[in-house]
Image (cartoon, rainbow, N blue to C red; front, side, top):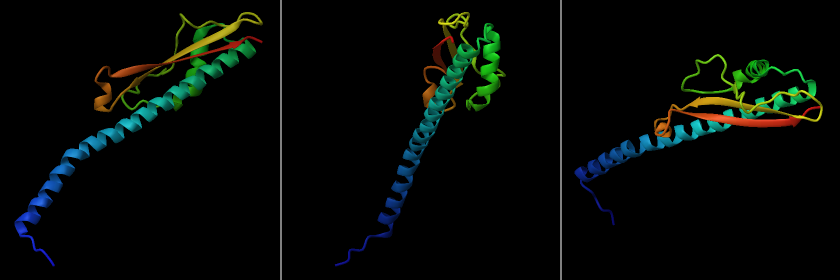
Length: 145
């Protein structure tokens, strides 16, 4: 047996569907963009780790980074272009070397330690409730050869 519904009931259901979509679509969009931004944050952390690891290895093998400014320039030249920050990418030297906690290799058997930092700026609205940016930090150390 078929049950016929009036046209006004069908129109009411169509209107409620539109309201539900209008309510949930922004939430789904924020969730999607937040997932993308957190993925970019993890990617940048991995790039920073690779940069500090390579700089520590180079300093331990060749002992050519007694000056930490040279080390920071080398890290930025090699790894800086791979970093992604969608918020504010206007800085020329995105990777900073923490000079207070880093040390250069002076003799065989000592440890060279490189501490790199990167300021990541959020663009997704709900992720920057506490702060507009977060400082990524990576520490790598190797024995001088």
